[in-house]
Amino acid sequence: MKIAAISLAALSLAGCAYPVSSIGQGAEAGHLRFVGPAGLAVRVDGQDRGALADTRSLIVDVSPGRHLVEEISSGRVVLHREYEIGTGSTVEIKGENN
Image: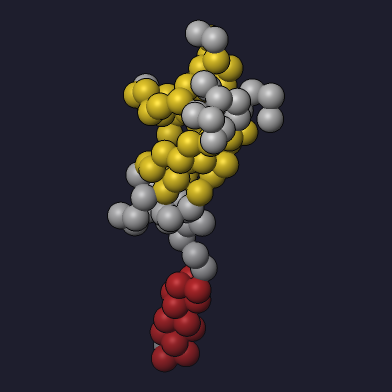
């Protein structure tokens, strides 16, 4: 009985060594870095977040988690995709012609 209890305790602790998730969900923002032609407009979760200027890049801070990203060029949506953003991570999204 004593051996069974020790074995059971060891098995329950062994599961603690594995990470729960590879995507952090803390309070620190994640970042979307858009690279593309000047004028490319960016929409995240249905909200306009600006357009790429002459620097041809734009960084948008977002909360950790899943976000719907759209890029608009010449009035049409050229990218419509979901991205999973981790705490403190930066995801680079290359736009049209890049």
